[in-house]
Image (cartoon, rainbow, N blue to C red; front, side):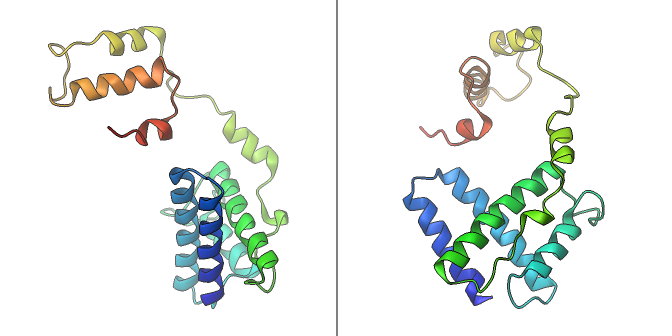
Length: 171
């Protein structure tokens, strides 16, 4: 497990120095921690192709346990992140062999099908106007958060901000 931890540490240090956002670093760390936890819980000594395949099967939409299942889009993303780590570790010499292969990625058609799935509810023009024109008198939440939440909705709707960009804003 030491080789895996060393590879993760070096990889995270590298992407930070390359200017990746804190949100990206946090997301990568979560994937690496999630995978490591699986390795530990299932008695693996370190990252390997067999361990990665078992992890993939444990979380896949088809065969994963109920509490652990992820979508094909998420599974594809997790495997891409791990593949980047695997390739980095092999090139750096901290991994003896790659532990992720594109051969175990979900079929592209399954990922595309989920990505293009219709939304159950799309914010209508009327919904957006109602949110932007709401005032304290009709607002159902506490008045302490009214201005902040109105500013958030305005940033999302009018500014085209992404959810992660909005969450990273500070005073």
